[in-house]
Each structure stands twice: as C-alpha cells, then as structure tokens.
Length: 566
Image (cartoon, rainbow, N blue to C red; front, side, top):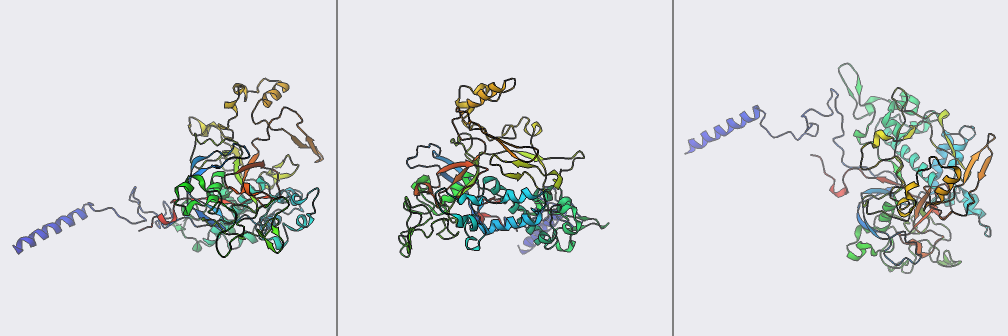
C-alpha cells in the first residue's frame, strides 16, 4: 500500500515538472511583467516605461479630498425670490479635490510677486501683464461710505493676509489657477529630480518659463530650452535608463510617471454645491434627498453646542445696518470679511462654504439646468481647443513677441497668453466629424433654452445676407439678448466706448456672465443656502466675491478603496 502511494507521488511530481517545463504554469504576477505581452516593463534595456508603483493621487497643496456621489442639486425650499433658476434635480459628481479655504490675500500676493519678477511692469511689453493681474481695490469705495482704509490696505497689509482676496474677476481667478498649476508641477518635477534645484526661482524670466502643457508636449522647449535646467544629473531621476550605446531614455517625466498632477481650476457649480452641502456623514434619508439647508447640520445659523451655544456659524449680514453685532459681543466676529478658518468647517473639512465671501465657479450662467441631457458632472461652459502647430508639425510656443492683449468691456487690458505656453486654436471638423458626443468647439449655448423656446429659432444663427438693420433685428429676438457694448482703442491707445442704448434689450444674460455661489459678509441669511445661484460679468469684480480652486481626482473614487499593489 505504501509503495503505491510512493509511485503515485512520483507520477504527480513528474507531471508537475513536465507542465512547468512546457510553459503550462500560472501567469506571473510580477508588477513589471506585461499581462498583455509578457514583455518586461521598465527594463534596463529601455522599452515601455510606466509607474507600476503608483498608489493614488497625492493631495496637492491647500486641497482636501471630496469623495464623489449623488445628491439633490437645487433648492427644495420655497423660492421666495421667484427666480426659478435652481429647481431640484438629481446629479452625480466624481471625486475631486477642493481648497479648504478661499484663496487669501497672501496667496494672491505670491502670484503678483512672481509676475512682477518674471514680467517686470517697467518694461512696456509686459506692463499690461502685471496690471491685468492686479485686483481692483476700488471695489471698496462707496458713494456714501468711508472705506478708504480697505482700498489702501486690504490687499497688501499683513493684517489682512489671511483674509479672502476680493476685487478679483472671474478671468483673473482662472489665470491664478493656471499659474498655480504650473508652480506646483514645477515643484513636483524638481522634487523628483527632473528639473534643476531652485530653477523655479533662479532661472526663470520672460523667455525662460515653465508651462505644464509645454512640458508634456515639448519638454525640451520649457525654460526656453535651457538644458541645464530641464536635464540635470540623471542620477537623481527615477526612470532614466541607458542602453548599451549610452543613449538615455526617460529623461523627461511623462503622464505615465504619475508625477504630473491634474490642473488647479475653478470648481464647477455642481462640484461647489455638492462640496458645500458636506453630505459625507449624513445617513438621514430626508437630508440626503435635499433637505439640508446649510453646510452645517440644522436649520439655524447659530450653534447649539454647549461651549459655543448661540455663536453664529458664518459671517453674513444680520440685518439692516448690522454686519456683525453689538460691540463687545459680536454675533459673527466680523464686520467685513474675516480671516479664513474663523468658523467651523463642514463635514468635508471645508471652511466658509457659507458666508465671508461668495465664490466664483466655472459655469456660464443660464437659468436652466438641463439634467435631461446630462446628470453626470454637469457643467455649462465647455470650449474645446487644441494645440496650434507650426508648419513642421511641432507645437507653437508663445514668445514675448506673440503675446496678444485683449481690451475688456471694462477698459482693462489683459494678456490672452503668456510666453512659454502653447498657442491654442479652436477644434475643427477633424475632431468633430461623425461624433455624437460633441459637434463644435464652443458648446456654451447647447440646449440652453434660447432657440428652442422662441418662434424665431429657425433664423437665429443665419445672419448671412442680412443688412446691418436685419442683423440687429434678428439679434434682439433672442432670449439672451443682453446689451452689446463695444470697446476699442485708437492708434494712440485711447479707449473708444460705444454703448448699446437700444431699448429692445430684455436680459443681462450672455456668454460672458458666470455663476457665483454662497452668501458673503454683505448678504442676508437667505443667500447662505448652497443651492442659491447668482451671476456677474466675468470681467468685473466686487468687494464680496472671492474664489477657491479645485482639482480633478484620477484613479479610484475613494481613498479607502484604492487597490494596493502586490
């Protein structure tokens, strides 16, 4: 009996060795072995380079993680203002990151300092770049109020350093977000050894700047092609490989390395409202369905916690002539804005999602939320572009001579692009042909209620062949027919303003008004509801609108569910 077991064991052993020798074995689980081809990834001999050690996206400076989910967007309480622009709808938001506070004066001053050093306003060609980035400090002035102390000090005095920046237009907020993206990725690449140490400070000037898009598409052209900066000692970089002939590969970081983070940007309106509600800890069905009124729990603006019972939970206008309460025992601790983090955060860890300052979001304003067409990452404002190419097929990099300046309706001059960036052009039919998901570069007006709600829809976009008077008549039939002021400059640089004085205009809504959310120090309690929405021209600023940045999440929806590598 024992001999039979021994024989059987020997037979099984021989079969196992035979299967192993003929390749009949379990596939390798090595993280550096391709499951598609069996080839080696990240081999010394070169070939496909990929970050197989990537765990999850690193949280960038200033941000907190917001796990996505579904929620009821819009106002479920009575609309006493009768705006009818925030009817409730069910929406789903992907996970993302958002600034825990509004962008502060100190943060914005760092931006201004960088621009002043790289594009000195003393040079005529760059003067408008710096001046175009400056906040409008005159927003504090009032015909019947004495506010000159804020006009002179609010932006620059260290006493207001941790207060939210105001006087910033939507356009300026977008430019700040772009600048911040480049500075953070510049730091990430330097830390990983792909850029020279301290190059972001020592080696930057107008002709030698860093742009994330340029580094991804044409890395050798960043910093003006300065090899000393963009190709430092290879020993510091993680993925550099050298073949038998001494040729290096992986000398530049790519998206596959996982080092380059997504861009900072303004949050969409849907993201902002979802984040403001702070639904992460809510398990009550009624609250989930949209019954939550404020970023905090409860139906009142005062705290019911024993230690701080009666204290206001946000900075807002208490009543007529009451911006903070009685001296000595202030209701909310502020008369104008207040320092960030002065009040408790919501369940996502976000501060001042109600009160202090209202905040710009990315969306172009329309009264209609078309959830019938889309209920996933809803956003109105898509304008798709692509990289401009030179005749030889390379990307076109902006130089100091290529800067284009735009004169806004306010008379302010801003730079459309900056040296070191890649020039952008609208997409064309090569990108839209036979597509069903988008069909043009500018999708702002898609299903916005204009053409489909008017009996004149059949000739809205057909101005060809019409006289000037006919075009004017056609234009005033539109639902969103806001005044069309024109501003130009003559050969001497003097501003020429042409005001649209027609009495047929019926709306202030156009493609250049943006949504802003949340109440401010200047607003009554009604506007603290995250569902409330208002709009303001994207090129203008106020003393009560600020902003914070967001960033998209790549990879797993939840941090706790991120898969680990074997």
